Image 1 (cartoon, rainbow, N blue to C red):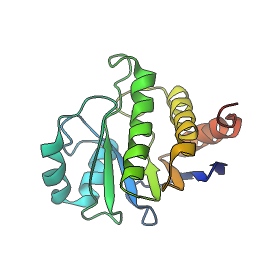
Image 2: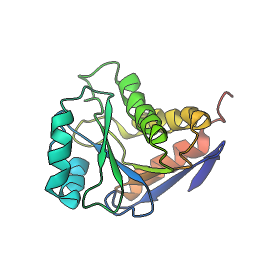
Image 3: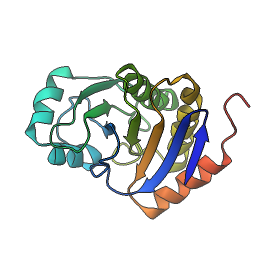
Length: 180
């Protein structure tokens, strides 16, 4: 499914975040220390190789809602945007911190003249953020930031399972236009 907000296309796909060769940057659902972990962070670090941790770890720790940029190393992408999402029930206000991950990643991509970014569903795995509320925050934030972006033209949400994709399709289809 695709939807356009201004000049930015939001695309939803089921797949592997480490296998998105046509985007400039992938977003890592990182841990505070920017180390290899489980889930998305583990997959990205395994695919990128040890150089990613060597570059990323000195940039940490980061706080929930913060994002840093590194090279892609062994990934097919030039860059990785490392975003620390909130742990549901612990990091508050969770919705604002989660929105900050998406907003800051897009702003940082734009500052570096990137044209495309692939996101996972940040905080919905081990960090326990319920999928539908997280999806509503993510897609509304992308919609709201889109008009201010000068270089980013494609935002892809890469979802792990069919159920995740269905929830994202439902939420994306129901979003109002920016400013409505």
